[in-house]
Length: 63
Image (cartoon, rainbow, N blue to C red):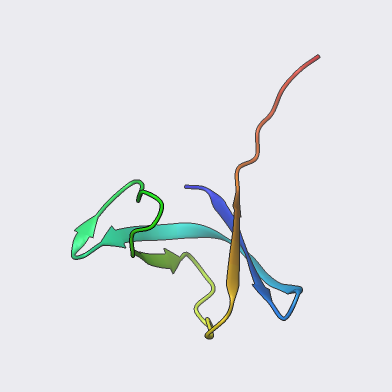
């Protein structure tokens, strides 16, 4: 699963991984833009209103 930074008031307060993603009651792998979904993080659960998620992946490459 992708990694996610939780940002509150411009400060990164957590760096975790997405543990679950749901659309209605179904577990899904992706959700299209503009649709509501539920996101669960693996370790961090102190989410508050106006927290922002910055989702990223780490890729390795060789020259």
